[in-house]
Image (cartoon, one colour):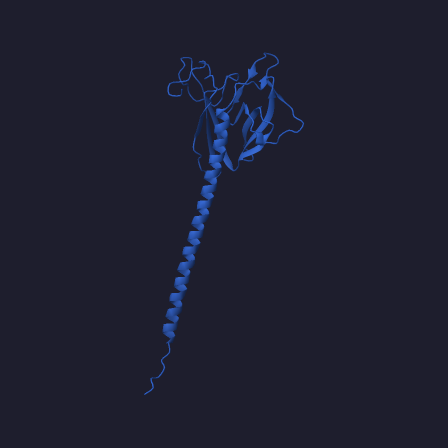
Length: 215
């Protein structure tokens, strides 16, 4: 006896199609979520790498700041070795060969509030003043898309103890003991606070001794 061939009913076909569509939708949703997660991870990794690079650059060159004058007041003959303001600081350090000729250069670090960029400009220093070069180096971009940048400074007080943080460094002829850098990105991300101890600092008003725990 021959058995009659039995096909799929319309309901079975529709059910199979629905199950296939549901599976494909779940697969595409999982793939999209994984792709978005990978993309966010790459963005975070790039941001963290940029933060590390900027802070490493500032740490290395601030720590190696030199007690070398880069400006001299013609009236009082007072020399400036470090000028610190809330959003700008100027100091002298050796310039890496990949940025120029090397030797002592003025590092002029500041934020442009209109563009949200932290930039650094360089100028050669000789005999207590900056020297104009034939080709003026263009400012280098350190970080972009910033909401705020704040520099703070401190040295030793009259009792040779570690003094309070200041937003303005008053003793232009003396290097501060420490410099703090606080930055925030446009998206509200707060960068880790950077605190650098200057190796050749004279400590501010108190002279050359370092505070306990910083020697």
